[in-house]
Structure formats: C-alpha cells, structure tokens
Length: 348
Image (cartoon, rainbow, N blue to C red):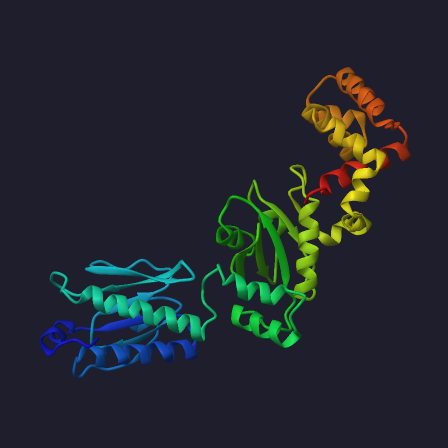
C-alpha cells in the first residue's frame, strides 16, 4: 500500500543502507531503496554508492536516497536514532535499520523501517548467502543426505554459501547451548552453518578447531570428505564421546569405529558387555573402571580419582571378579576397554 502525498512529505532526508561489500547484494539493496521511494511517493532524491568515507562505516558500502534510514550489520546505530527495527532472517537478527534525523519521530517512521528491514532481509536471502549461522534444516539435510544426487547436493551447498569443491566438515552436536553460539566459537571468522536435525545438532564448516568447543558440548567431527560421508562419520564419532572425551574426530577412532557396526542385540548378548551393564548401577565402580581403562595404570588412576591406593586396588579387584576378567593382564585390560565402549554405544 502506498503513502499519500502529505504523508510522503514526512519522508524527507536520506535513506542510507550499509551492506556487505558484495556488488550484487549492494545493487539489489539499491533497487529496494528506489522501490521504497516510489512507494512513498517522495519526489527527487538520489541513489549513490559510498565507501567508508561517505558512510562513516568500515567494511561496507552505502546506497543513498530520499527518506532517512541507515542499515548496517553488526554495528550499533549512532545517536541520535529516533526509531530502530531489527533485520531478521531464519529467526536470527542479522542487523538493524534505523532513522537518523533531527526532531521527534514521524508517524511513518515505523512503516518505512519495517519495509526496509523486510527488503534488506529478502535481498540477503536471495542474493546472499545470508550472514546467519542458523540455516534451513531441510536445506542442510539435503546437503548431507546420502539419498540425494550430486547436483541437488551441490545446489544446496551453494545456497548455504559453500563452494561444491571445498572440503567440508560435518559436526554432530549434543548440547543445551544454542547451535549458532557453538558454531561461532569453533570456527571464528569462517563460513559456518547450523541446523537441528531430529535430536542432533548439525554444523557445517570448512574448518573445525576441537579445542574451541565450550564445556558441556558433546561433538563428533567427520573428515573433510563428501558431506554425506562426513555426516555418517560425525554421528558415529558422537556415539563414542564421553565426559572424559567430549569431542572426538572420527579419524581418531581408527579400528574402534568398527564397534559401531556391531548389531546392538549381538552386543547385549556378549558376556563382557552384560557384565559391564551389571556394574553400571554403581557409579563409583563405573568411574573407577573407566579411569583405569583410560590410563592403564593403577598409580595414574589413583592420581585422577584422588583416592588412596589401597582403596582403588580393592575396588578394582572386586570389579574384576564381577566381570570375570583379569584386569592386570594386557588381554584382560583390552577386553574391559572394548566391553566398556560397546556398552556405551548401546541405544545411541
């Protein structure tokens, strides 16, 4: 719906739209600004491109026209800003639009800002990729699914902002933290997309730093191979994570990854796995066994558990009887490690 001539008279000033330094996106935002001028019926005005010197902003370009709004991404508005509105895409705020002019707000400020914000979001989505971390789950699923064809996968990756020829890691996540926050932490300054799929979070990126995952996050990292294979590897690696090892690269599993292929019913019927299930009701015994299996040394287990040497020795002796495994022998320790890992993989 257009604006009347009397109302349009209130739109005097300058519309300034700061955008990422992308010619196609900048051009389309300028088209949107022209459309707003016509919609408002404001005569005259001009559209001009400006760099840092004209807009007073770093890292962007500006489109100018009659009307008085400025949009930048990731930079707070300068004072005075009479009215502001968020630019949202995929339920994530990617920037803000606001009006700068002397005097009190005009009645049409909110209308103009709302339309400008919608236009800016539409341009970012159409000509992006969008500067959001969160992505459409259906698009992410298409990019990593083994059911789709190569052409569909390449198109999905393109829409997500990834070149088809670039190596891409898929990360499977379990965490209470927001996925966009995790993505920003593990691959700062790089292209990253995230989406929830079923009960697992998915992160796509060309680079992952395992040391940057925040506390409380479980993550499996697939190799930078085809996205569908990387997704399978990431889910497998996620199953092997523990409080002691919350982040695991699939490549680090080696032959252990074969345990994930064992049918669960077969694993449950194994005597060693069944014995682990029996002691799992006692958290202290389970922690003691896990620590001993991880270190392979009674002395190091004592250091980690902060208990007396004799207490740990007696506890391990009792656990060995329950398991019917000689934990002090190399073969027995290997059996206990495999059984403990196989038990953890059940129902995951």
